[in-house]
Image (tube, rainbow, N blue to C red; front, side, top):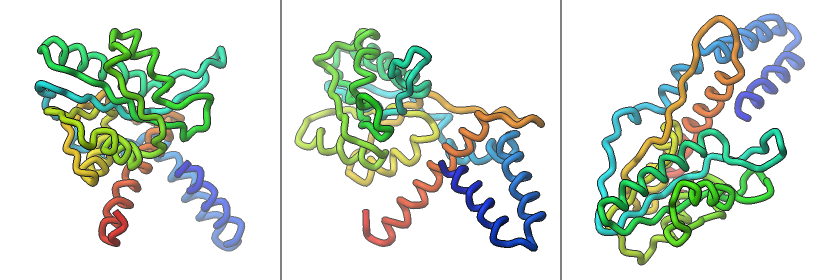
Length: 239
């Protein structure tokens, strides 16, 4: 979405600035080639995921709460609504952590936080539930938070769920690119979860443009702008 907006701005500038059409067009083509070929996407993604590669493994206590953030849904070739790739990895990671937690004898709960920002048939949390059940996480230990549309709302709504609840260890599961912003938002609501990275993204740098590199660049820009927005809002007293 961010890259689409940038492309639209380039197009508008080319239309309005007739004398500068050629240099603007060349600048636009060069910029999008650098992004699609990975030369700009790689540092952007590395910046968004900075510091997330060496996170320590979680520790479990008497009562452990595992919070998994939604990662979107999509329709497959048979028009079935399924978790997107990053969400599937988050589900697998959360289930593995739950299993490890239970082996310690602790009480373990999984909070799945994800609403329906894409306006699909069901919310992310409800869509992910069967996949957690398939991975041997019992329904009685799963809490669905299916109203959040943003990372900020994830943190706010999870904080409301946990208010007044006693827990000894709080674990947050999401992808590396989302974790820095998620931690800021959770800290904003007085929660200090231990981060667990479900997956990191990698850019393939080369000569030929790749669509995946544009997706990674857009994702990185979304997270970096979100972090900047958080700090601006804090300075303004809005958060």
